Image 1 (cartoon, rainbow, N blue to C red):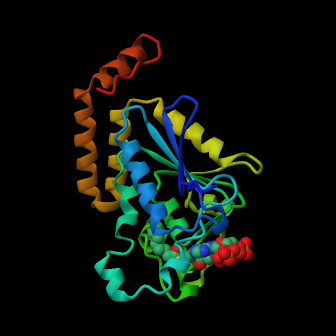
Image 2: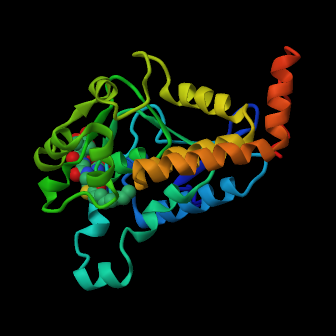
Image 3: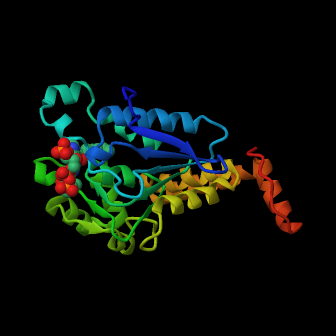
Length: 262
Ligand code: CO8
């Protein structure tokens, strides 16, 4: 067939509330090429702007997440090209998405693959997944936020161990370290579990979900006093929403709330 396979397959969960994005370069272990990221960014942007989507899952499927940036594409890039074209500059678009993103990692999450996983909001993996930053073995360092995000997640010494020795961290250990939110049972589909988690979030009011994501992310940027003030202001703001009135009324009336996202 001459049809061109998409590098990112966008589907929906059964309820239609969760947009599922599956990296699709199986022959290259989902190596993250520029065209792949262009497609991922476009899919993310369209999901973020689509009212029917309430949560997003990013996965490579139940075999491999991503074996890193595409080394074959990168190997001959010069400094001037990288600088002029802002190489990797657009790869962090995912961190500007307002809707919650659940990552599902099975198999390799290496280099940029590990960093892409770290950019999600809730992260699930299998016990035998492999997280690693092997950039040092290629004469480079992580370029997609790995050095910064790992420190806040697992602390300086473990981050240094990963970045400077290319240590492979199995999913089970990643769970113990707090690199991921949840480790699924051996044999369970991490994609199916991630969709379940995304459906849970998708069942809540979209405004409170967006505010929760925004507030938690602020903790990474702000000193504690400013972060607390930001959280309190957002919290107070939610009393202007119909969803707050509905949520609390439903509690009193012992019924399920109906969110209007208003
Ligand atoms: N880039 C390009 N091609 C790749 C990559 C990659 N990162 N990883 C695997 N492939 C290709 C292989 O070349 C091979 O292709 P071919 O059949 O044409 O030779 C195919 O995928 C299958 O791979 P292997 O035959 O090597 O499979 P194995 O099971 O023997 O080994 C490994 C699997 C261990 C994962 C091995 O492929 C490997 O070490 N890959 C490279 C891992 C790596 O170093 N990743 C880091 C890349 S640098 C990086 O990510 C910089 C981050 C930049 C920031 C990104 C922001 C989000």
